[in-house]
Amino acid sequence: MTSSRSRRAARLGGAALAAALLTATQATTALAAPGDPGEPRYSAGAPSLGDPYFPDQGNGGYDVRHYDVTFSYDPATKVMDATTVITAVATQDLDQFDLDFRGPQITSLKVGKHPAAYRRDGQELVVTPRPKLKTGETFTVTVTYAGTPPVVTDPDGSIEGWVPTDDGAFVPGEPQGAPAWLPANDSPADKATFTFRATVPEGVTVVGNGRLVSRTTADGTTTFVWDSAEPMATYLATVTLGNFVVNETTTPGGIPVYTAVDPRLVTQSAAAVARIPDILDYFSSIFGPYPFNQAGAIIDRAPNVGYALESQTKPIFSSAPGVGTMAHELAHQWYGDSVSVGKWSDIWLNEGFATYATWLWTEHTGGATAQQTFNSAGNYGRAATSSFWQIVTADPGPEDMFGNVPYNRGAMTLHALRGKIGDAAFFTLIKDWAAQHRYGNAGTADFIRAAEKVSGMDLKAFFDVWLFQKGKPASW
Figure 1 (spheres, rainbow, N blue to C red):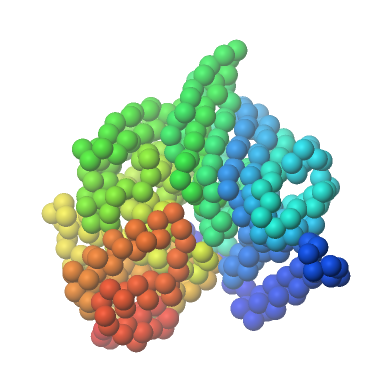
Figure 2 (spheres, rainbow, N blue to C red; figure 1 turned 45 degrees about the vertical axis):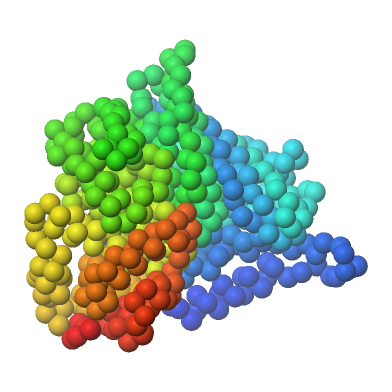
């Protein structure tokens, strides 16, 4: 993500939050009285995965494998009629489980072929399946709902979810916007494949993740089917829609590219769009093969949003981007999308990598070297008294997770690491990181172990200074 987001919300106290999560988990996961050893021991899936920044996000007891989302939407009325079918596997014997859902009124809900009881509690959709679910069982949840999807406001004051525009909707999801329009296990730790089937008035274009499977028009409406074949975190899902100029091409290295640009922004976006093939092929040379079967970009006019987001296979931009912003969001396809964090406090691994990739692209194209950018006034050149040095890189808090520190200090951490272990080890490390965790999740502790393994060095003191301590690092 690239942004200039404001910081307005207070952070939850860590000890109080941990206690609350423990109490909630204990209350909802108590096992039924044991019977015969071979009998299932049914219990409720946890209503949270314990993320310290978003304690209501994610759910336990199952693993989602696929989302199939079918909906119609009319930009004139802003009304959505939708059915989402979730295919999942139970990871425990379940007599109850939660989904995350902030969306419109539910009209029906089934688990398998059977209607299921449900209730809504904030963003929690609590489902009671009958028959109960056994460990290892594959099951489906079919949720039908209708109404106007909401706009979600984040702790830093920015907005996401389903954001209406003057010709459609701009749909960003980081970090908690996806449940505005689809029921989900809304945690980056539970990736799944997606299919979107969107019907809109003829003349409106829907652009989603992955590849366009079909586009059919009849009786004044057009239905678009998009398929995302590689696993994706829910916050990276999008079905942005409106009036777009669409172009399809292929990079010299063979990567298919699909771009959709608001007609009012074609001229302003031309330079950034033209560099997409070069950016992708350059990053492929240093990060390893592009991880998805489609690349591209969605450039829309959403003036109330004010940021770009690395939606998988097609980053979305709320205004015309510059080349640097385009490079940042495309770098996320490797670092953030294919390799995702499991908890939001590790956001520096997403944003630091994407920011550093932009530094490398700038140097590659004849601009400032990465060392010069590192030393600049906006980075290491900041005074030691700057508040910039008073936020912990590896735990910035929900109000600062999209601030300068995870981005700039995260990138500086990578450049300082490069200086410490040398170019050969560093570029081996970042390529191996992308390959070994492809389509998976990894965190800060994993990265430290990987850096020590590749370099053969004890780097604990280095990372302690750069990631876990406040204050300007004096040396490394």
